[in-house]
Length: 234
Length: 153
Image 1 (tube, each protein chain N blue to C red):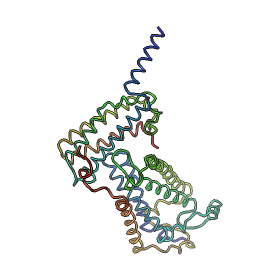
Image 2 (cartoon, rainbow over the protein chains, first blue to last red):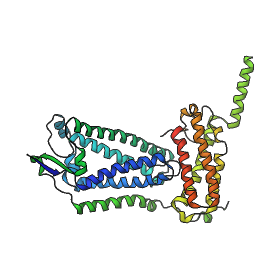
Image 3 (tube, chains in turn orange, green):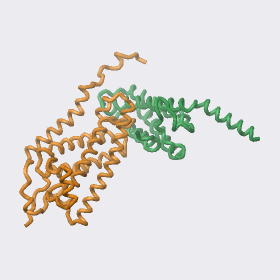
Image 4 (cartoon, rainbow over the protein chains, first blue to last red):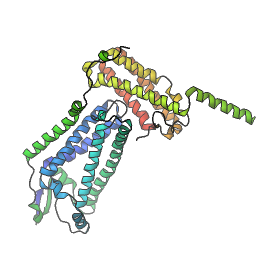
């Protein structure tokens, strides 16, 4: 007997598709450059917020969204590879891919905070690092993390296509509708989440992003005195 | 005949070296020039984009003029053969392909010079919105070179 369950709650789906759009927009703005770089920075801030939200939702969200639920421990991975794993949500191999994507995105956003394009754009934390060589390295890592992201996204899409075509398991539609038909034995386990927790997670994520942007002014404020008072007038 | 040719080559090499200096010196001047450009783009960014309430027409025009003057100073002379390998203030990030991509490099370099000249012109009018637009276009031309011939760390 099979039943339809809410496998992906609304916050997870919004997170997923917002992330897709935001990463695409970040890529486009970085490629075009010029004044769009400021938008690249704002989109980066949004992605940071999404990642923080995902981390929080990985603890308080509905059970398939929780890191503890899908964390790919070696026994789970072994069971999956031997065909003994039965569960809902990310399978252990898919969970590895999810964690790799999240980890790489964290590196991407983390280095972006310190990066500079050596033209007229710097991440909000750029000035915290005085070492030029380290700055260059962080900017370089930012570019490399994006290349890795392309590989991981390609793998992600290929895997979904493989599951859809070969294994006749449609993973795309549930990420759109949230619903998936599963054997009844597995269905009762979706708990947690809810609007109140979601609002809390959004607020906390917003505060984190705001602190990263505004906090640097407290740690290392911009000299606000007019240049003419402290330097010669030539 | 061979001796004469060798002498001529030696003389030409010596002359070009005297004009632009040895490799390390070319790289140092180059890095200094771009660092100076960065100081000036930073000034414009601050007053035109980040804090338009602090906009000072003369301050921004001075920065734009400095950028145009640097762009027009003949920077190409600092890209002698072998300057992809030396150390100036720090190791050069010039890609070796620079020397095979002369036409493309000329295109992006000219685009930068034109954008810089235009920015100086627009800055003289004091129209902050027009300056912001042209400043963005200048940034795109900087990126043109960075993407083409600059090593990503």
